[in-house]
Length: 305
Image (cartoon, rainbow, N blue to C red; front, side):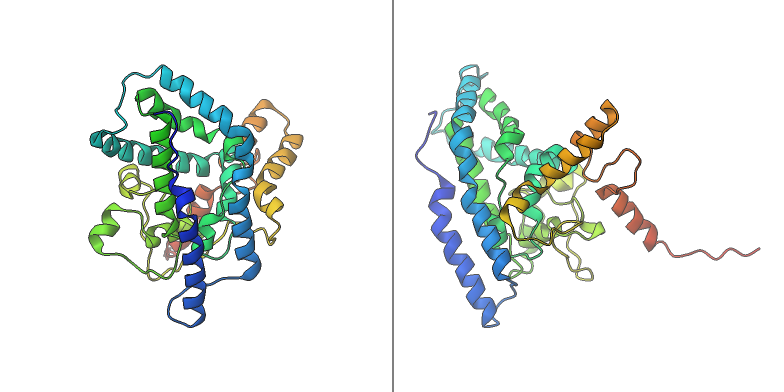
């Protein structure tokens, strides 16, 4: 099956809106913890609504590329086979981990992902603050190997949608921690709060989609600590609710940096180095910020002469 009319995200939209409304109401009457700011919420909702506009241009080309790869597949995984859905669940989730980590560690792809992190609040509406430029950045290419292995474009798209729907509920402060066994296996609100935090300790951690096991396997896991509450947003917050600025500010910054580049090394660094890279080291990457934080935690040693 190349195309399916089943779209998990489209079906879940009424649920998204209803639960956001409920979270706002329950927070207002003091039953749960949730912080909403009107302009910030509107910006998140607008980013979510605008997410589909670039797709009107790119989805056809992306689908055509997926079909072409599928025609050259190594195996054929039957769409109705239960084992196929089990396998793609794990493979797609691992692919998402790789995409998500890539999108934080390389500036070109960070430019298309950063808007999801620009809110300084963490609530269900933040989940809808989605990229407008992911298709242009080519992140969809990372899922083509699944099609090449034999999973149909429809099956890949459905599993991507399931993952996206799952990730909606973890964008909340209303839920503290899930049972220990659940926290050990799955991505949860606690794990994802760490991912959205700008505290140096928490930067670039917990890239999971559904399963947190990938972060534990690849050394990017950081538990949420009771003694250090997450501070949300990006290292240098925008201070703006303009959705065009939210969507394109990092692309504009890349363009400005490229105009100052003096060598191919500078060009490559500004495009594909980690966010915060600069030729002279005058800016700080996440690793620099974390290193400074670690150094600040080391108590001064008395030296006796």
